[in-house]
Image 1 (cartoon, rainbow, N blue to C red):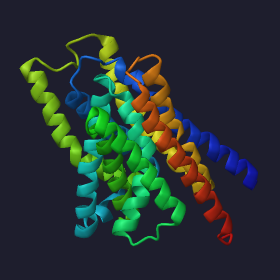
Image 2: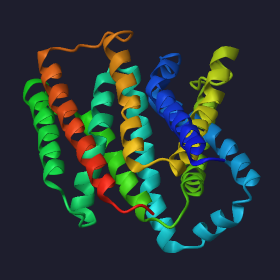
Image 3: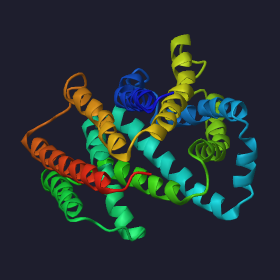
Length: 297
């Protein structure tokens, strides 16, 4: 297969993943009325068999055993497990409580949070334009805080996923294997919670209707499939290309938030988003310039 063809397939797969993540609020809104904690538990419980099938197909159970036998790796993955659970729970709650624009803001500033975390924890050099971009994003968050209070949803999403990415960058486990371990850790808790709600008669599964049951079961494939597309696609793309494509997700949240979901978007929000969009333009230009100067591998 030619390099051009591989790149094209990579763009399609990666863009497809980010488009699904950008439009997924439409899916979660179909389950409006079910508590976010229960939706999170279903997402975890139904993801487990999907990942088990993928691990079996790729003969990766040996890798999982190696990770489980490494105390250092497991300690890191326990931390990432907590972070991804916080991120997913906050995201689902935000969608079903009219905070989708806050979600959009959080994922827009996430790349800049990652740059800041790399500077603080990994000693990565913060280039001048990167520093300016981080300051502009901080100014946008400050503007919202002064007018509407601390945007805790945005900051929780940005920092939980930023810290998640930071730890996953240094952990000795492949993406799919690491996610499988995280889901394996969460599954007993999620399943026990769902069984308890079912016993109390408050659970949604099997007590509502067939449509709801099917939607809840679909949370597993909806979690795993785009992640699989992403992992396959990024292998043939440059970091700069992935950096541009990742804005598809928060842009989808933004468009849905101001159109279908009709969330409040006043002058303060416009000013804050303008500062952050400017920061992202600077960040993207700087990233492309930096990568173009690097010698080809």
